[in-house]
Image 1 (cartoon, one colour):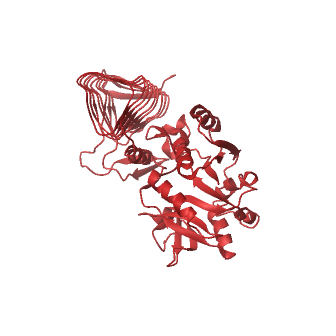
Image 2: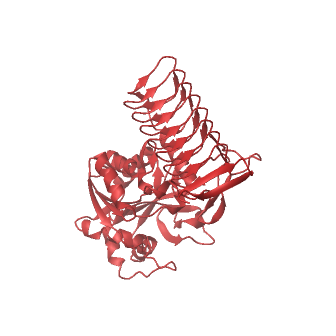
Image 3: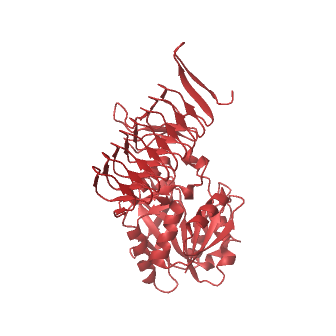
Length: 429
């Protein structure tokens, strides 16, 4: 069996993390999301060939996959124009001509290894001619493709983002499909968004009397569309790790729970680490640091004396200066925190944190949520960063500066002590 994965989107709602990297390259549980998906497809489904539909930042995706040397053949199909999911899938047609069925996945979906294993077992149990849609019950089904099933868990209808959903069961973006769906491309019409939608192909096949089994995922399902989704997926993935210490752990270090310390990493005396935690290659921790659960610290990072980090992703070559705190945040690569930089992750009223996403203020589902920082950001000493703030790449933040709203990329932000004003300008001004 071959697999088709959609990975062509820009991930604009994940700005600033996706400003300098495509969504499939964001680390989840210590490895890029796409790499994780490919690894489990090989492990549980013995998938040896994957057609990867790429578009935005395709060179960066390809470069990461070449570096990883995954044990499967990757075929790239380029979606130059974004004309919908059916249009994207149709790009894989010529690579599937000798197949009857194939596995189809959205590239930004996270499920646990146990559900992938169960999925392939379920596929093996299907009757002849039967296809499969993975499903999940969610709180807001109107945002997705809603499924209507009969008592035998076969699909009766699929409704794309209905205003009044008949159920809370939605398509989870993982499917086992027949190649005959390609034959309907010439009869479906663009949606109101001007796109060719995959549900229309499924509807056309239903009308021919063909069957789709609907199988509900048992574990967590995360559609990684917003910054907090990355942290949620990372936390779930981290729960699957097992302890492996390859780096140097100096005397008087306390480690409990599942912790990975990779080659070349050094954990200095006085560090206290509660897993699940992953510390990647050539990173130095401490001394006297506190690293709390669901934290991934990337390659070649430096975490200074008396730093506390919790439920966060710190990307490669970033330095967190001494006496700093980072919680529930994603920090880009090549960043540098001046001593005493603090991330606030809780409102005084303890209500859910709000964020600006693509020009709209959104109430996030998180009561604790820190910041989302792009690459190459520097802060001066004692900078304070408020909950839900996004800081664009290549930005400098001055000493003793309070950042309470989003900062655009290439900015210089500092507090002028002489006139008591906050100065915000472009770095080249």
